[in-house]
Image 1 (cartoon, rainbow, N blue to C red):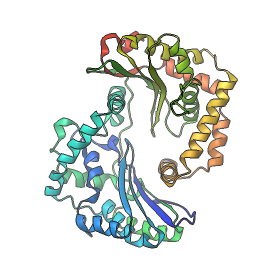
Image 2 (cartoon, rainbow, N blue to C red; image 1 turned 30 degrees about the vertical axis):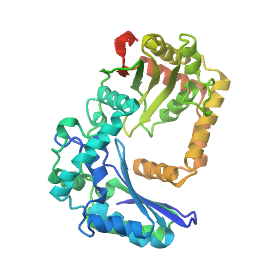
Image 3 (spheres, rainbow, N blue to C red; image 1 turned 45 degrees about the vertical axis):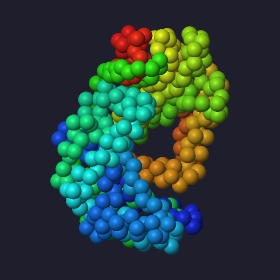
Image 4 (spheres, rainbow, N blue to C red; image 1 turned 135 degrees about the vertical axis):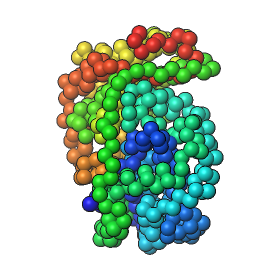
Length: 408
């Protein structure tokens, strides 16, 4: 079966997405980086349309076709005016179910893969989070979103075909439509069923190990994240971890503000007078999750800053959680969620991820009730889980005064 979810909002513009459980965690040691190429291969020739026809056909009706991928999911999305749904859906079906991967087109992608990697290198945050996953897991979730250097130009069209055949099956797909009639979407869904039914390959369960990755580079700053295993996305603890994230501080709420409501910022400002930034980090997957504190600071203050950040989580684990902080965190998390689903992009992601993970969609009211139901004891317990869990650390920059993970 394929899961189909639609929301008729009577918008003149429609958005339709195909979400597939085929992120980088499903790569094997032999085809690492294949999802990076698939991300770039959406506009290549398919059995029903050439690369040129896809590009011009979508363009002619004022539509757009985009692809994004995470560690667990690949999402193919088309936007168009409501009258042109049939036209763009033809291209979406072709791209997701009938790619040809002509060898010369695949080899031409190498330059774009290199460009992607160079752009990612411009952001230290991306490197640190990628290294965190590589250090935290033995398999699956340790796979990078980017093709490894040694695999550049090594992934063949056959490997891409095999990956698509094994993972792009109806049982691993969700078809989500906004501003579209459910009957129309159901008709489209039947075409997917005809193409490739079945469950596909069963991915291996992520195994958390804990560890450390240090990347030395120039400059006067240190980016560091210290994390422990948290909870899977569907676990009741996941909401408590999200609230803990907002108690600690999930980034500034006021443009150019000093982020004074963040308890992390309050704790760190006591140990350094130099500029710094700190926020709590949380990532939840189907069978695991990571929770930690991310700090950016001057190289000579790194030891004090990182220890103060972890110390603040320890403070909450000891039961020091003010009712005002808990209430603020709940309000921030609720507002963040409701604002994220105000636009079609956020709403589609919310519907798609829930339908793919649980086979159902939770209304905004149900989500806010879940947030409000979390007690102070729940948040203290997840803070304890972070403190007692085996730590993983990733750091980047001038590591002259950055502690190792066993020194924290």
